[in-house]
Image (cartoon, rainbow, N blue to C red; front, top):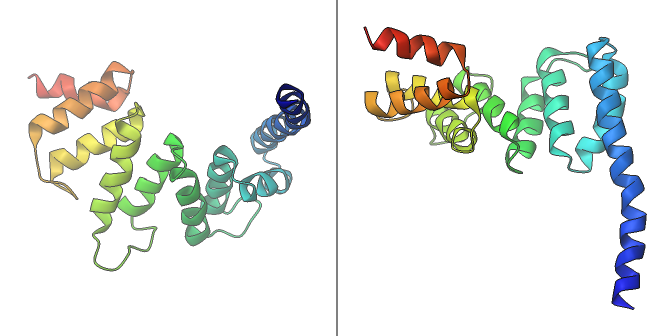
Length: 175
């Protein structure tokens, strides 16, 4: 009986998962064609349902005002939802929103510290852009205690993944 119930549940979920994947793919295609209204129409229900990739894509559309009114506040809301689910691009982009002054900082917090926290979340899981950004923060002492050794560690991790700016920094630092 338990096996039969599991089979029924899987049979019901497979079409939903496939439909979501198709809608994400169709939204990405719409974005490539600059058909932002279609992308938003496809992404909004997925984002509302908790799909982290859809939330990230929708946030980016809000940030750029593509298919929706430009809104840093809405971008932050959607990046935050995806970032809290562990979506690495959202964690990096949310860090950027704080680092570049596009997000309202919670009372008693420093924007660069909040940025550093989000960069660290993505960097430790291998996101090269976040690793590079964290390296820059350690190099400059923005939001973290200035530490050249720690900066170099993060630059090296990013460079190992092919990050051009990290490689350039490391080449220059050897001179």
